[in-house]
Amino acid sequence: MTDEKRYNLRELLEEIKASGGLPENLTTEAQLWDEIMKKEAFLMPEQLLPLIKEVHGKTYPKGTEIYPLATEFSIDRSNERNGQIASIRADITVIVEKKDIYHFECQIDNDGTMVIRMFEYDVHIALNYIRETENGMELKFPHSAVLYLQDNGKIPDELTCQIRFQDGGVYQYKVPTIKVQTYTLEEIKEKHLCVLIPFLPLRFQKNMKAIQRQEEEGKKEKLVTRQKEELSFLYEQIMLILEEEVANGYLSETNRKTIISLLGKSMIRVFYRNEELLKEVITMTEPILELEFEKVERYKRELREQAEQYKRKLTENEEQYKKELTENKEKYEEELAEQNKHHEEELAEQTKHHEEELAEQTKQTQQYQKELMENEKRHQKEIAELQRQIEELKQEKRK
Image 1 (tube, rainbow, N blue to C red):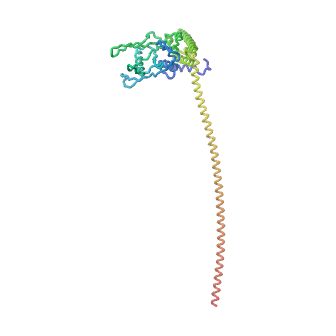
Image 2 (tube, rainbow, N blue to C red):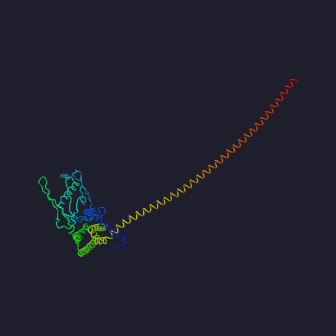
Image 3 (tube, rainbow, N blue to C red):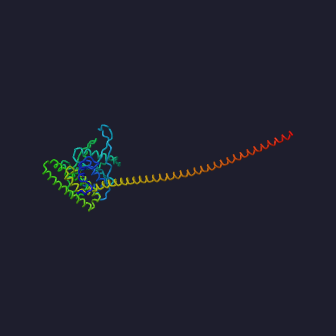
């Protein structure tokens, strides 16, 4: 890989180491293997049919209906201190042809209690799908099996538990086991057991522990080199098998990509403690990693573009708002000025009209006062003339 890659190798290595080689949503290795099995069951349940044939000897034709069932069951444990209802969750439960139920569990180590847990799971599965027959109620146990993912010579071919019933009857409960690491690539190819492929890197775990324990640098380097060669060979062979399965119609191209993606997650977990081997894994799975990083980068770019677009829109809106505010202010000021001008003109007109009316009234008042004075003068003259005439009459009477 070069510096031109869309992701930084050093940052990627550090991120993988910090997460313990696990995907972001998982915290334990056991969760990873369960998650891989669940994704295979839910994304490509038809790939479980060859596994069913391998374990239980039952063959189903191509195109047989198969789909996953609910795997969580509520239980009331008498030894629980709080007395609350708890739950158990089986790994994989599928139904084939609407009648045959199969139950698979993934296990790393043989802890001695697995058969009891399997019996508990199977009882609850049977209770969930109880049916009534002519002879009464019937509990039908699923066809179960345990996939032991890690190489362990102590794993039996089947887990057994003797069950004694109250009537004295004794039943031997048996669960077959699948020792994943005992299968060769040729067997996986011949039997079309592609569902086992993501778990194959686990066969390197013993060697990885030996590499970690090795303190002599020269020997450690040789172990790493040999491990790298074996890993490269395994990966190349797996790619060829998957291509043949697609070409022969046993696997779809989508399912091939899913298996490769799950295989990449498995290899990262197995080799994350050794940087050189982890680099080799990243080189092998680079198209997958690039695809994932491209998704992340595209998502980041889209977020950045959305943020930029939002900022631009916000800026445009702000500028538009300011522009509209300025225009509205100017328009308001113009309207206000126009209104003020109109009011002033009306006021001036009214003032002028009032002044004219006042002037007219003043003129009329002056005219009235003038007429009043003239009338008073005339009346005074008339009174004077009248007094004169009275005097003349008085004089005439005296004569």
